[in-house]
Image (cartoon, rainbow, N blue to C red; front, side):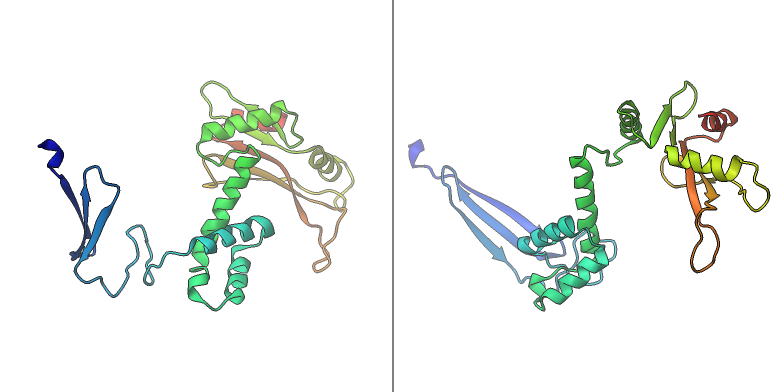
Length: 241
């Protein structure tokens, strides 16, 4: 009878770096149990996984409690990756209870920073359209630094960033007629390959402050323009804002 027939199913999986070592899984239809068999000799050296670009040794997966403690430390202390890695090395001598290397800490710090940005409703740089939309929302909310976002047909979007204190300092140190010793020059420089947009940064010397080691006024950052092209109209829009 059909009820007396037992259907047995088997699945095979071979180890990528050693085809002679494979796993066999035996199950019976209608049963919640399975039999796992490992055939062959497992390789003595554990190689890095296939996504590793710079494999310096064997790959050993970190324990979940180690990764959880590492994420909590990075989230609460906000320390630099090297400082977190040094503290973890000094905390325990057991290899199985420690982080793998500095790169692992850097990855966790980067992941925690992205999660913090998401929690604050900020864009994580998924694409340029999301970033421009985020800047437009900040302008609408009256942000004191993001002053304007220009979107014109036939041109890349551009964004003007500054605060009132920067404009006041530029008028004070660059525009007033005080003679040679009481006036400074405002510099303009475009930075290439910073991100999807260019960044044109203005700088000036703050004559009201003097560095203790050089006795020279420090250089302060003025208004910043984020733009996608270097056309004349783009810079004129920046200077007229």
